[in-house]
Length: 143
Ligand SMILES: [Fe+2]
Ligand SMILES: [Fe+2]
Image (tube, rainbow, N blue to C red; front, side):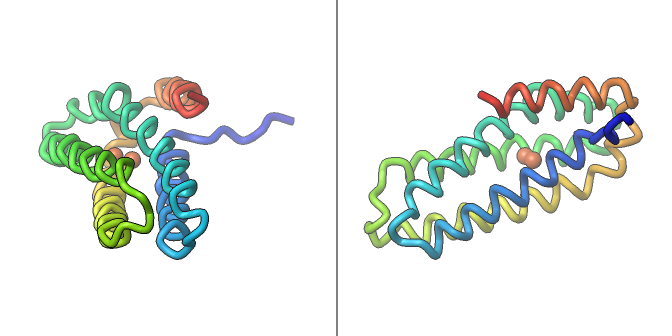
């Protein structure tokens, strides 16, 4: 029996949830905070680069999605800036926790907005392309 095929939207959504969950634990855990942060942002980095090179360019086909896509690029840049700061910091620094909190807020806002475009984006991506994106996403996430 063939396994039911997944689609790129389900994978992106699951990855958003995973990154948010790991960063929430990083906010709580003291001992493992930096390790959890490092693991979450490694995924986030691959996720964002997949979106920028393979996913967002497809949204251009619908002019209504362009503003959201352009905003997404900017939000990715903001995330990279905060991640860069956090990478340099020890988790005992008094700015660590508030900065991580701001990163999480930004990610939650960004993911919610991104997911709000999925129903329209779905119409732009034929089944075959969707499966191709699934393969490319998995390849990117494998590192
Ligand atoms: Fe994104
Ligand atoms: Fe995303």
